[in-house]
Length: 318
Ligand SMILES: Cc1ncc(C[n+]2csc(CCOP(=O)(O)OP(=O)(O)O)c2C)c(N)n1
Image (cartoon, rainbow, N blue to C red; front, top):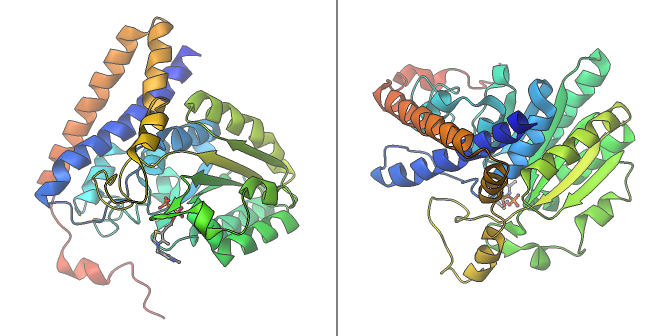
């Protein structure tokens, strides 16, 4: 068990510190990609994806950093892609919003809200027919539930009883608009209960172990059909960019301070230290910081793609 708890901590620490490095480096304007930061949601990606393990095929959104690092731990590829270099998993053409690495289980991420959900369904349909052992899991924000593609996907997944895990990363906001002003209903999970999901969980918290356990319990239900997890978190930074935005008049810093009391990384570190793993925590933190430094150095030294790469890997209609 301590190995699992330490592993959960290590991945969350990696995501948080990789993003802290982005915050320091981004103002130099060497990373020419819009950044949608994951700070605050680390426990969701790490808890869900560690529970599923190597079988996970991940589908996500432009807020991709946490799911990419949690699934692949490919720090070198991650930074190379953000710096637009050929050594990135997208050859430097994908950037932050379209990070993907199908060989390592991240199938696609997209800037277009809700578009990855029907694709995850298609993959789950294929897994069902082929009877392979892949587990398709799709991450989306609460804003995606304002899209028809979400409702059609829920409908079809339940009608065809497809083995897919829906994970709503619910931060209560679509850009600056709160769910309260966007929706005619109050609670998404209550609506989902009207569909034929095999397992539904709503969890208002940031405890990575709990999210891990919820996900582990859900996996056996996939034999009979889809699973829906609604996991709430607080987005620490602005919608797009690397800064705080508490002076933008759509939210209050006190809300952040309340959530920060149960910051996923802080509480997991506390638990490990109380359990007597102070030295192991320090070793993990040093290892992660060294990994990030190497990755940034390698990314900066790597070449940009050649201009003709622009025309490769692009749908040309033929
Ligand atoms: C189809 C589509 N409509 C609108 C947008 C503009 N847009 C970009 S992000 C966003 C908010 C999405 O919020 P949510 O799904 O909750 O994700 P979060 O940013 O909170 O992670 C919107 C409406 C878009 N990218 N795609």
